[in-house]
Amino acid sequence: QVQLVESGGGLVQAGGSLRLSCAASGRASGRTFSSYAMGWFRQASGKEREFVAAVRSGGTTYYAGSVKGRFTISRDNAKNTVYLQMNSLKPEDTAVYYCAARVFGRLDGLDYDYWGQGTQVTVSS
Image (cartoon, rainbow, N blue to C red; front, side, top):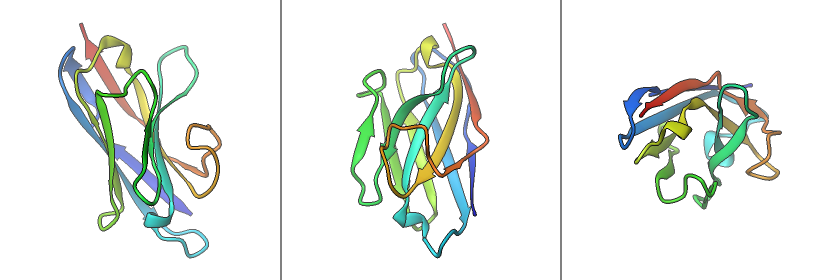
């Protein structure tokens, strides 16, 4: 089993920045953290969970159109951690942010193998 723990959420004013972290632990089928694609998703109150960003094991990154140019996903395989740097935050970015891990499949799909518990991000206007 792989456990994912997010941190770094909080309250920030519009235009501000936050950096989320997701620390991975445990192992499944002998796989190491570096072999997983990692994704960030978010779910606003009353809305469906949506894709935000993902990074493949090789480092290629993907972003939702709504965050492209403002958010940056990165990973540190030595620390088993993935990050989401969020700049120029808007009130509509308010949501619970989840990280997730998968080996195969669409990076923007919701059927990841492992999920964290989420961290709240609130952007005030």
